[in-house]
Length: 247
Image 1 (tube, rainbow, N blue to C red):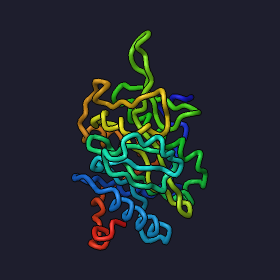
Image 2 (cartoon, rainbow, N blue to C red):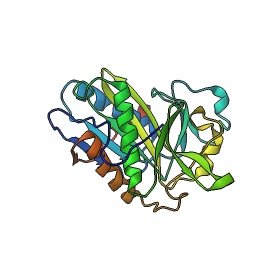
Image 3 (cartoon, rainbow, N blue to C red):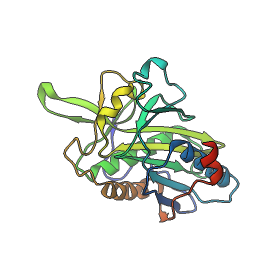
């Protein structure tokens, strides 16, 4: 395991100091439309026609199945819509109160090192949690960021943030999901990330402020420390074609 405090150990800065666009969607975004928008942006970044982007949003309640998902880990398939996802990992939940951050970065310029990129994502989350006085940790045998809480026999370790990425010609997409104030019972329909014996938690469940704006500010400050500068931009809007096809 590792903990990150102070200066991040896996800074992944753009060599030209180029700023990534930082976009926040105010209304929940349907999952198929978000995936279609990411795919379009990835292609544009690869062609040199668009800047890197971090897209913060919430989804309606749903489950996604990563490329390693096992059928037996979907315990309640009729509870919410289930979408196959091209990202790595297994089943996860997305819904209101969870801040999803889709990260579209050009790793051709940032080192072409997948392990270092994942480590940088972990450090990003851990640094953001420090704003809340929470110590986030990672485990060699478990993906995501974890927190220990409780005392004595009641001490437990739960996941507070998930990580699932995909690369296309060295451009990243998908990203992270931080539990700010979701309904944690919604995770009961799956085995989150295929990990049994541990649960999930959130900032609100740990007694911290569940305001999404505060979480966004913490994420932005931490992102700059790990990945470099950002500039605010309008959130992407799905095209009419995306709405009709659910691409």
